[in-house]
Amino acid sequence: MTGGWSPGEAGWWGSWFWGPDYDVAREVLQRGTAAVLVVAFVVVVRQWRPLLGERGLLPVAGFVARTSWRDGPSVLRWRCSDGFVVGLGWCGAVLAALLVVGVPQRGPWWLTTLAFLLLWAAYLSVVNVGQRFYGFGWESLLCEVTFLVGWLGSSGGGAAPPLLVLLAARWCLFRVELGAGLIKLRGDRAWRDLTALDYHHETQPLPGPFSWHAHHLPRWWHRVEVAGNHVTQLVVPFALFAPQPVASVAGGVVVLTQAWLLVTGNFAWLNWLTVVLGLGVVSDGAWAALGSWLVPALGAGSVPDGGGSGLGGPVALVVAVVAVSVLLLVLSVRPARNLVSRRQLMNASFEPFRLVNAYGAFGSVSRRRDEVVVEGSTARSPGPDDWVEYAFRGKPGDVSRRPPQVAPYHLRLDWQMWFLALGSPGTRWFEVLLLRLLEADGPTLRLLGADPFAHDPEGPAPRWVRARVFRYRFTTRAERRRSGDWWVREERGTLVDPVDLVRLRRLLGPPG
Image (cartoon, rainbow, N blue to C red; front, side, top):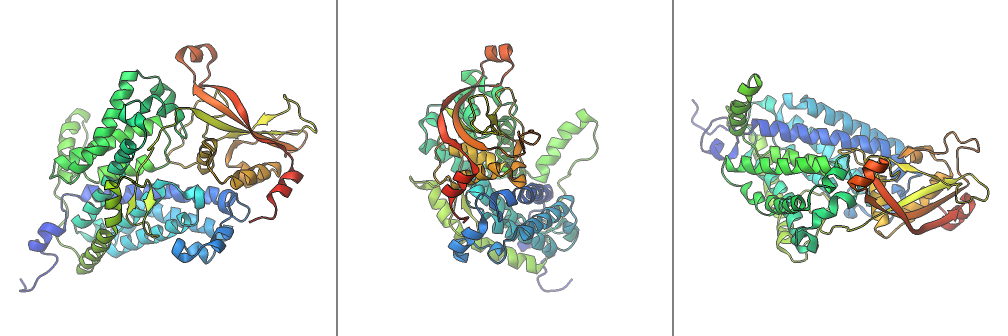
């Protein structure tokens, strides 16, 4: 034995720096985050051109010209052609898929770290120029978690994951849950009087296949839902930092509540990524205890035994983790202050690299659901019966169509249509959408559920488009038995009067 200190020895350093009881947590955090990244980059590949590309609804080239690197660091400020961004998306999806199956993790720790840092830089580059189509809290959450899990080391190196990084992941989950709980209490009265779930399942942005059923659960159950949400988001987060097995139980509670949200709504990857963070709190010992209870009943094989990796690890990883932890600690000051502020910000980033952010969801709940319905007509002088409705992939339209399951995939256009119906400012993107429909633009039409004019004998493009506003509500049980419909709707007014291609081009003026 040598006389000097070695990071591979299970001495005083290993006893607090490494987490030998969190091998499963590392695998879940890294592979789970990578799986979400696969979806996120596939969304880039499929939706970039029609939304943000050269002929997109909000072309990035104009945004880049109006802003600077300090407003949002991005490699797309150097080059943002459609081909480059789609290629970046494919590279990101492939690299993330390799992490899902554990290929980089078989090598040294720095290879896994490098892979996640490349993914973080690539996705951050998209988010920082994505404007309103990337203005969601889960975009910052994905950036933050991607950066974090890259510092957990690799299973191939034989070292346990660093505890400082595991604690940083819990701090992230703490802000996600507590931030959402506090913004609700400080926001809408419906959260305080326990009535929020009387409306939410029906008025949420993209209801799912079981949202109708959840909406029609008894009122007393909705009160239980809200009360349970308050406990999970206002009390349970503090237990994430308790000793084991209390922390594992807290993580399990978060996972169970997120599972209910997965069943009853479509919030892109917000709930999926929160589930990953919740499972990342569970220790190997807790998995072993759960397995010993489940395996006899299932007749299954082995479960994690909690033995874990060794306490040692490379000196370079130790130095890097300490440096990153100090950086994250400094950047946590403003998000921590935001949590206790009466003017709490929801889904805010305090620095352009999105390393430590503020989170929150549904500080207010809509009581009514309005939808913008877009229609086209090939008639020269259309009458009331000459209009055909464009069907979107996720948002309500046809009253007989059951709300689909789309999450974790993110239908960015459908989400913006929900904000549009709420009166969201800045509607040029919607006017450009109408223009692209009049042009029968292929990439734009592929964002929709179906093109009603694809086989029209009058031609593939409408002569006119218009937009009307309808008030939607779920059918009652009796109405559904009678009609088979999931929705009832009534017209509330006109958002855009009938307009043709020539007039709309004149109104919009030059591109950009």
